[in-house]
Image (cartoon, rainbow, N blue to C red; front, side, top):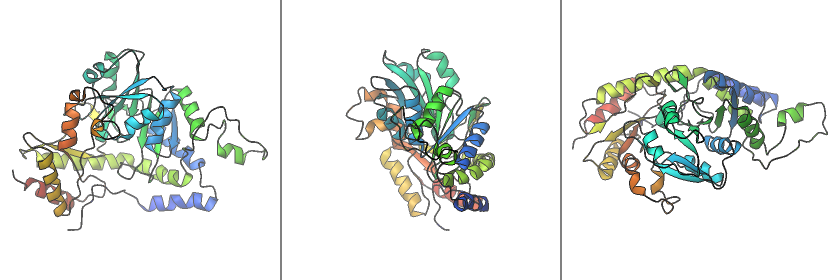
Length: 379
């Protein structure tokens, strides 16, 4: 059997045909296809505003800046997440404060957040890790009203909780279109929000701080007109080349999630009797987007055993990855962390999780090969 990748994008003829349109038009920077992608993405997630960006990292940055996060503020983030969540807080001059996660969901919850709130706490970034939403409504009930909630929804396109879509649960949300995500534009990100003030400022900041877009300026009737700049902004614009792909990908997202749910169901059924392995569970009322299918080796297995398992799978031609990292253990942050002993679950998750192959091109035979080789490992 050929090597089985951890993930692979799912493109068809539609994406190839779509990308020809901006190429032939001569307009390949942010334009009509970005606008269409934004409208479709916002419509699916039932939010008012969408702002496309170059990546989820830049979406996080703009989202926080447009919300007024700045120097002196503290923003609570889970430690068990990709480093970009914390970095975006740093970009604003604010301080990330790390909270622990539940091992059942790998997500932050109200109990851990409450322990980290101080008079300087301005916001919490909840991460819908691997595609499972945080119960934001429950968190909102428990924390002070002045503490805002933002969503790192990098993995959660199409995810929901009790009928509410990811992206509309907090003040604003940031999504990723990296190739390992359910839908992709190569690189790319999106901000969703129902707040007009955040949307308006984020649009300006992504385009150097200009008061009007490049499309408005170049296609308008006054060729001598240059925009006003009231802010120091950035070049975080998505291109029409990327967005043309995104338009076709978002049309397929419901089907992609349905297929991923089928793959996850087969994994969970087949691995239910593997005594040394903890499989993911989906709470009632949650729609998991299954960006990743992540298992965890049980005690007393440890980092060494987890890595041994991954090496065995690699030798069989099966790609796996750790779930993600514990940010408080990374060199960029570990010297800044106090009371790291409160982050026990994040450390354990970083050392014991394994992401199995999960993508829309994963065949039944490939999945059965993954399962068979995993079950055959003995301790």
